Image (cartoon, rainbow, N blue to C red; front, side, top):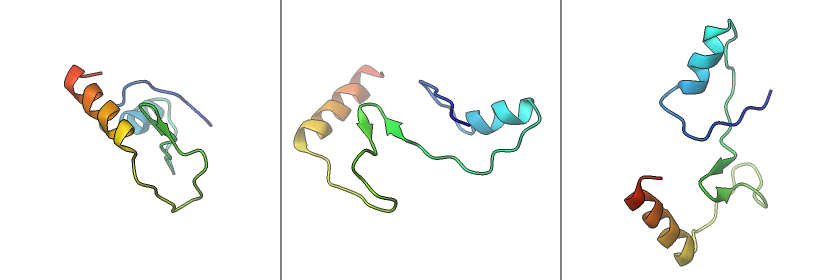
Length: 64
């Protein structure tokens, strides 16, 4: 099953599914703000670009 939430709180997805009688076995974050996993294999990582860092800092300052 795939769901999309725009703002997650601690254990929100697990609580939502427990409320309808289903247990969450695995969660995978596919995207955070404008960053996604496209082009990365499982277990891979990459350095953020200076532009991405600047964008994340701007988002943190505005609270969005």
